[in-house]
Image (cartoon, rainbow, N blue to C red; front, side):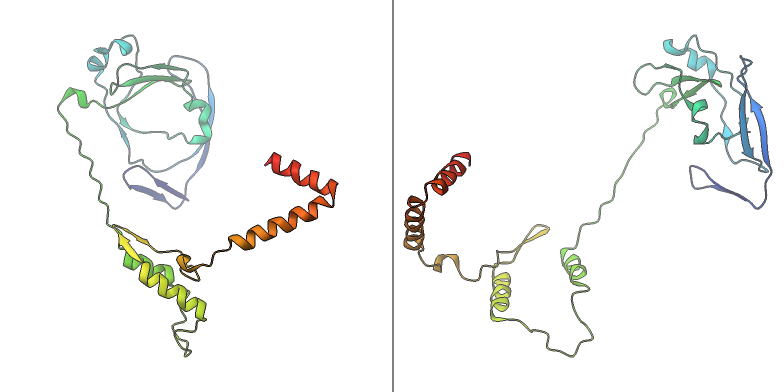
Length: 225
């Protein structure tokens, strides 16, 4: 069964196919390569005709002969035949000019012939502005028990204080929310702990003065830090 998708969204579907084994070779050499493929009734791709005089106008392609034939594609080589896709020689000119590439099957050319005419290409991107309110609703899904008969607000005193701080400090700046840190108390109301810290330091100094080894260990660690 064949289901082939190509660039542009077109597809080829075929219920049954034959698996074939054959050999292909470049037109200018006798080297042969074994290929196994599935047979389909038709392809939906066509090779366009080459404008050889136009290609010869580029100095980097002037000496390249392209064994090219326009018409339906007879064989599609997949990536499993990477050794036949490998580039052995590349002729490249200025930016946006066609590029000639030689593989083990011969020469081919890639590029656009837009330089022959005036073609304008436009690229438009549509970006939808993010709705932060809807985003916040999605973020809370799975956290709310919608069918629960228990009270909506079951919080400890500290939790309620944190929620009150969130509500008081929450502001929206452009497309983001800014919320204050959930301190248990206003940091300006915290007591002065300087004397307590100083007392603990003096207690540690007295303890280390009685244990010389421990004092040296402390000293080495502080110097290292």
